[in-house]
Image (cartoon, rainbow, N blue to C red; front, side, top):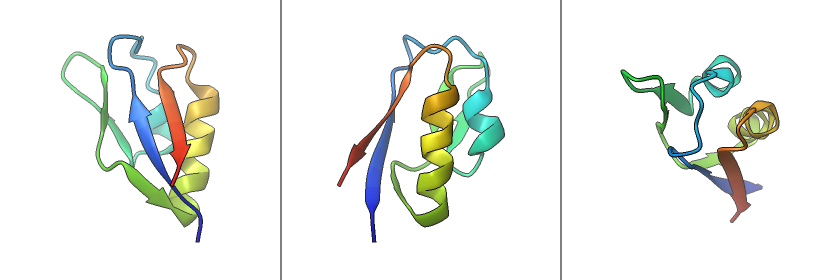
Length: 67
């Protein structure tokens, strides 16, 4: 099974929230709207959702690393 580790550059985050909309099981936002990662290692459907979130992030603050 393919797995990856998701990461976020909180300094680059512009609080758009696209990541939470497409992958709320992986991402959340703090009180200031900055991305938070709920868990880093993703597989299966979560990996598909994480890939969508990375593509949709207007700030390019998200990344995936194959494991």
